[in-house]
Image 1 (cartoon, rainbow, N blue to C red):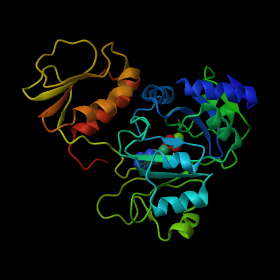
Image 2: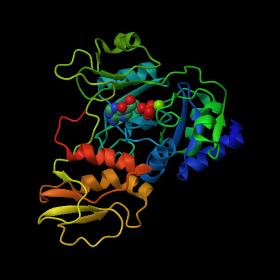
Image 3: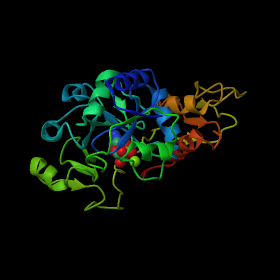
Image 4: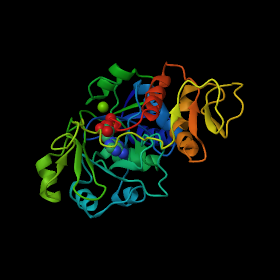
Length: 318
Ligand code: AMP
Ligand code: MG
């Protein structure tokens, strides 16, 4: 249901998010579909509601630089950009801190995290009410344009969801995404903050896909995919000696050197929530490979299979 951004609705939105539900709310860029970024299950709901065919990393929203610095390592460049543009329409990709509490699903299994401090007063009020970092991609079904009005969200995602309405988004474009992990910053996606404004602070910036040697990469595709070191074998119906098993549902496969089950009950949301943490846990040299049982190709299963297919191919990964 669409509800105006009253104090009561903001408190409710915060409580819902903290409790693991997804809520749509305005930011200065576009309406976001937000969920507790520290909960794998809450983040899985975002992918489910958006019907995304792939798990890409999400932007984590926090209320202040201090909170951001608890999640990622800000080098001098990242700090300078945060200082210049936060709160605002810039998302900064930095290495995850060792003690980072953000869901691995929100980071698509990567060692980096994209963080933004939004300026919009309702987004900030919801962050304060939720008291947790909020992962929020645009609040539209996969493949559709980003919503800049509450009504767009309802048209795309239906109105079973709480949609906090605070009128049109002032910027109306997604945030600019810039990666800072030592060296020259790389712009991964153009957006609300211009390249020129970033270059004023950071000096010459690289744009992903331009001036790169080798195959052209599309924006946002720089080291985008978590790739296990161990070979990954799909559609396993048995295991070879030394293989670890990543299972799904009930089964009678014996003899794995170690087994983890994405969801013993065959629940795809639970499987999505566990995917990256379990792949990482099994990705150890003592296992000759990770054998993965077949996952049904529907709902979140599509995104799970997309990720597994990428993990099973040798690099370079698109
Ligand atoms: P959205 O959340 O749909 O607005 O999109 C997030 C954008 O940020 C996408 O272009 C992602 O590729 C990019 N992004 C988010 N996290 C990372 C990360 N850890 N590394 C690289 N790109 C990222
Ligand atoms: Mg989008």
